[in-house]
Image (cartoon, rainbow, N blue to C red; front, top):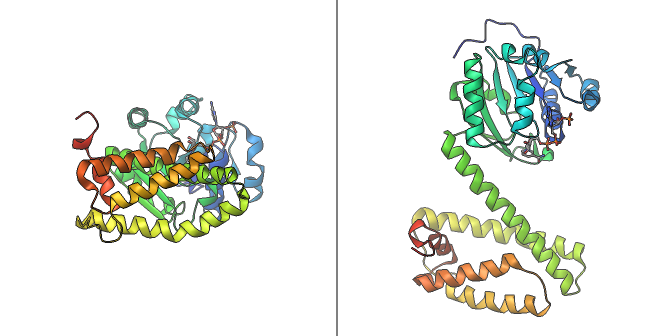
Length: 302
Ligand code: NAP
């Protein structure tokens, strides 16, 4: 990796793409006292950032020239290529690092890395596990992959975007991001399903939503802590509640939901999963043993 320190830069970081996420990232850097250059296809979105001290560049090339590192937060890979194809941009990539928080696939990321390397630049792929409101929060996470040396060079800057900043190899990073998002959104949809079902019972939805949140906060966090402990130690003893006890209770819950004609695809799947795990011989174990029923050797049809 070529040394960037000999070159003097007017700015610490450039942010390219001022949508919901890019604006907040630029704000986070400004709040940390960084000198921030910005560029967006529609310049009107830059007004508040300029008022807060950012410098609006008149083209993407100027944004790349302004700083050693450019944060790309564009809609998709197509938008990234549109920006890279703008006049002067390929030339401006030499000796620059792009940290790309645009959602794309591994193949698209590797292609961008190769393209940047050919232009003498460097590529770090970032995945922020956050909504814009969570950027900079001490409990938020940001996963990075791509070129480790380039990441390490800009780690201190990137740490300003999330409380936990990690770098993983490509396959590990993408696999982790995949299962993390699958889990987080499945949990959210389970919540929405429960809130929706409460309406079928004639409960006031917003009041029940708050009650569900308050009641679940400890119950679910504790259950996941316990599941992690059991998966780490291999202790699946059914000393708290056996899986077959859960399966019976879940059948009653499903009956109550169906009696109200509630549409509950998530909870119906929960019942199926637990019954299947019980039928596999995990019935006398803790509910955390359900995780073992998803193992490769237990795939349906194996
Ligand atoms: P957004 O609000 O829709 O912003 C999209 C940005 O891309 C805008 O700056 C837009 O410019 C630019 N853009 C779109 N097409 C373009 C093109 N052809 N050429 C140049 N610029 C183009 O999206 P966002 O929510 O900020 O998300 C940005 C990226 O972050 C996405 O890949 C998203 O998956 C990822 N992400 C978002 C979140 C989130 O919670 N929002 C969380 C994690 C990851 P204009 O202003 O000119 O339209």
